[in-house]
Length: 221
Image 1 (tube, helix red, strand yellow):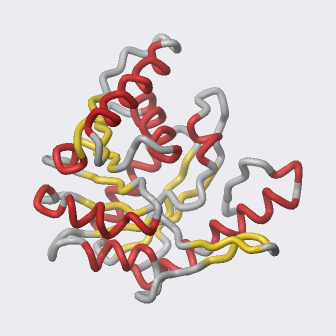
Image 2: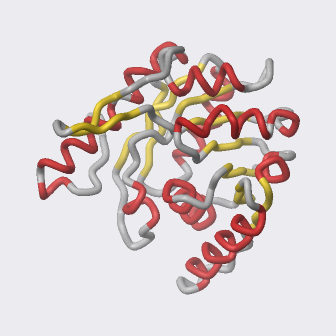
């Protein structure tokens, strides 16, 4: 498959790019509003894999070009950039599963708090912005980006996925399963997105208040 990481120049994009390229045979492309930035980061990811004697090709493009012919497009952008990013690539999303890992949060003196948009969840926001017929799945929430991007770090995390298209959800959970140390779980319909997204501020607060829980994730038994 062709996996487009839209806005894939940031922390979550780096981790997914490195692990998907190392652990799968899928084609990974990096998107950005700035194609030169996308190319530079793609080259940096190639260099990191090359230092580990992994021969990899990762290309960088402007977001619409990255999304073109993609089987899965992951919008690796903050919630406040999500709608604009999806709208910018709308014409390139034919037969594409759109994935949103973004979470609405706000911080105050008591810590991090879940702050969903008016439509109820960021995944619903992505679905509203996507063209009709494009299946949207919420997944990859709450992953500790630093640990994800550290290929020396072992993972043991579950990745709940929500969405209304069962085939699209299965595509995403299969993709998650292909990454060493991750397990994709069906967490229900898009209406269940708030429950999944709200785990992220909880994880951040646990990590901030317990020194031995840095870079933690979830595993369900």
